[in-house]
Image (cartoon, rainbow, N blue to C red; front, side, top):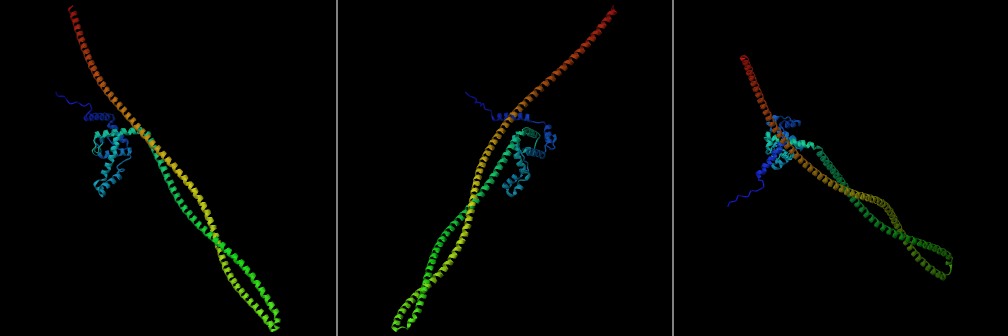
Length: 463
């Protein structure tokens, strides 16, 4: 027993394509505009165009019209795509780009790509290059009908589109302004950081120099104290030696006076004189030795005084050096004051840097907030665009239903009109038949009347 293969309940590809084709034909029947209306719309754009041009299209004129539509709806022409197409030709062919790919051809191809996207948005899914190169009447009527309907719908939604565009432009301008302010703040922050590093280096150098000068000043103070103590000791010793020299001089003068007093005694006896001479020689030797010791001490004192003079010159040079050090200390104090002022300024700069950092963080948060708001606005705009698209689809559906109803009503009216014409024709035929019957009845009446009259006449004659 043979069984037939089970039939699938899913529609085949041919059925789907057939149904899709029917839907496209129905949509095209609703979207199709008369030739006169298409020509009028194109003439309103400022392009001379006639019904004859539409029925026998010229490729150059058609390309100009499409280019105008591209500039109106996408702001793209063959001139705007020329740099990108030239760069692509140079990347592919190098120096032979212009010879292998003529500018007109490549610009037309680039414009065709953009135009095909526009046609997809308008609802023309089968737009091809032949529509630009070898256009036909039916294809141009279909494409122009879809594009003109799209332009009309776009003009009806101009306020919504302009509102979203203005919001996007204002948001973009605000983002660019915030980004420029952020860049300026970063540049100022980098400059302040560089100045801070320079000031820190100068402060470190001044601090190091100050420490060195402090160490040198302490050494000089210790040296000054040592020299001052030595000077005091030398002065004390010099005073003691001067007092001792005065005492020795006074003793010498006293001895001279005594010797003068003893001269008369030289006339005495030799033994007495000898004894006196011995005593005097002893005394003299003692005095000589004492005088020699005093001379030596005087020379030592002279040497000490010379050394004291050298020490005084050294002390004077030390005092001069101390004065110079005092000047340097004054300068150092000025530098310290200046460093303190610079440190205060650096502290203020640091506070301003922290303020700038806080401002930068605030701006970053504001930028993040604006970015989030931009994303939210973009999402809202996309949602609104989606709703507008859905509304447009609903309007298209309503328009399609209305068009179908209008077509059905038109067909019904056409049927009724045909039926009325047929009824009127039948009524005319009936009227003509009734008139013919009335005329025939009238003729029969006249004939009967003539016969009756003839009969009466004959009856009268017979009577």
